[in-house]
Amino acid sequence: MKFLVDAQLPRRLCKWLREAGHDVVHTLDLPLGNATPDSVVLSIA
Image (cartoon, rainbow, N blue to C red):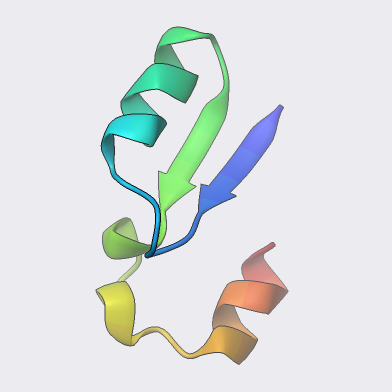
């Protein structure tokens, strides 16, 4: 399963999900980080 973890959630959630075998990206890892507009985050999701 794929997950996009939003800024209000901790990065350690990504680690936990990866260890469980999931594909996960945190918004901090996007090119604009937390400055990524909601419209872009929505299009990725």
